[in-house]
Image (tube, rainbow, N blue to C red):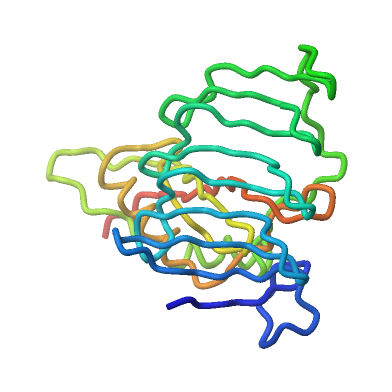
Length: 232
């Protein structure tokens, strides 16, 4: 059984196909998990992303992207939610534009090519044509929600309470929904667990990152501050 959701250019969910620029169809697979397929309004398949779980929180397997013409645009493989192996980006026409190698989510190497297939220097990433993911209720409200939801964890007797910040990395999908969350900078198990609980419990969604007007998957980092309570 498939579930179809419609989104406008800012990844706001719509009630119908009217005004939609993306259709996301979610289908359960017999082996468990789901596949999300993203379509243009004309029915062209643009992206296919497999997830190991029904909540679409952990990517697993080959994620594919296509140009509106139907030509392959990119391929990357996930293992337990992290990029693994080769990630390939193609030019329209089938020539490889970029070839990267990942191990446990970390990019180990990258090669770039021109349209004729000749090896070139990889361009430096810039913010030109890019709009970063944003919390739809605004950054001020996001900070308030995090602060209000955070509870200082209990510490064992004789242990000095810590003051600091846990940074959580969140994967934001093309639909603006938060996917995987993991600790980017931790303070210790109790603090890290609380930070993940707070971030995973956020009520709002995000507007996805836009690259040249198209929504793309991205990572968003969020800090959770811990201030020791004042002794009574």
